Length: 301
Image (cartoon, rainbow, N blue to C red):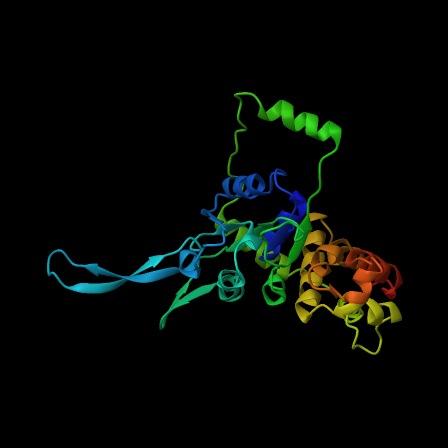
């Protein structure tokens, strides 16, 4: 999970982290803000949260010297470098949609004015599993804005014992900044400049196209079980993720293995199963694994 979060930052993207309560999702992102020396903001998504609570709003303010009133913009919690959208599926779609322009355009429009956000800018949203009561399914248009869908599960017994030992005492971890915002932007530019062959790009596009039931090259099981396939953003993020994996692994260029290593995180929230898949208990994860085995990668670049 930590590796996927860091890859998301290095690629300049946003991440969706899913897991049941108590698995340190919030702690991870808060700690990330400290070690990356970024301005951190946490937004607790609740059923009564309003869009203006996120983006900000114009208010009338009286000038004490002249007695005149003027409109003043009060920035919302989104004006930071690292945003934690905690339990994003606890708030209605109207408020969830307030994140759309911000995540894609990295700017906020209030009335007739547009306010840019400082770089770097990353949103990490946490959500509890959809099956729990009191949640709202994240709209497909907003889910597509997230580069990775990162899942976290319960720790092993040994890991949980270590968690207990290190959190029940008075000693707190001492976190020090290891990167600045400017250095993160430089890393993002470096990763985008990482070379990638046409063959690797073609493989990523073939993999994404295979998830679309209307595509003539899609396998029969995709046409049978998938209602909606991945968008072109998936192809972009597969290559960006492969570039980041290559940079972290000290490789000279992105490769097929890099694409495969990020495919699950990129595709799982962009591929929608149909009723037939749910009736036969065929999961999206199983379909992605099958595609990774069957879609040919081609010759070695």
